Length: 463
Image (cartoon, rainbow, N blue to C red):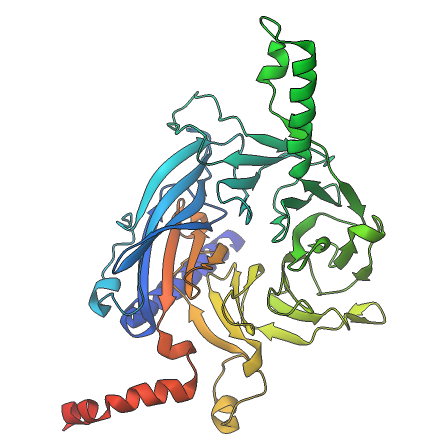
């Protein structure tokens, strides 16, 4: 009986999701300036923008990183794609809503495939070198790839995996998700099941190569050389290992203005701030940042006092690091409640200091503006609506958990998001690249002035 009830509940939930999706699709021409839907044969747990490659009259070409998490019948892959992003106010409304969910988008083209040793859980790009990306898999190591020099491979059963250009060692147990790149230096930060936060500098690799080259030159070239050494992947150890969590570290983030300051969150419900200059113990530890496990964290690039956290308790908290806690318990500036399931990813907008996005297991990607909290001019309309404070856009184009998303820094209101569709459709995933209509986020006076220009035409059509 219980099994039957569970099946019924699942069916009801599926119907609800389909109904929501159908409603969303009917509103695409009204809400979006541009949207591309790309069906994935295998789910991707991460999606990231790379550099802008070139510009044309109506669209720009961008690098895009994603992955293929397979069932073992073919190798797992890191995919480097080229993506054409249509410029604002170019796409026709009727075109962007006419897509087939089972098809691949003509705007997304595979450029190169790397056969990854193990599944790709997280991808992060180096701000200082657009050719380098780091990946996390189900192992203690962080893998570094030069996407330009790596050979293009075909994902066939039995094929040997690609060799990373550099391996970062230091974790004692699997480090699967927590991964961050420093905006100011070529530093890498990671967290894992060993409850540790680990810091590396890629400078150390360059230094070790120089030492190796010098010692080889001293010894002179020997015929045959050290073959064992040649077949090993180059690796470096950590600059520092930081202890303070009591459970798995789920996410890490650098302070945008300092390579020495960073933060981490974990399954122990803690938010910890670290400073490499003062040692390997926490500078500040917030023991109860949320009521449940913390999945994600992001540090504001616009105001280094603000930090966002997302949790299994379905909420996003915004902390001010000048006043993080009271009696050891987290004291957020705001709590944002607009998801019905665990929050998996939070990220500040690169363009607007008060705007950020959150993605969750409920299949929704919410866009928030903390400046709008408590600053409404029409309190009656707010009371009557069920919109959570600060929420101003809901992207409901995914039908399963949204596992990752990324704002495009060179086209700031363009977002790439990806869902793992295994629960809803039994496999695969959906990649969407989208930009909301600019009338939604622009200043109200600006929008009204623009609409006023069309007033006579609008009234002309109505009469």
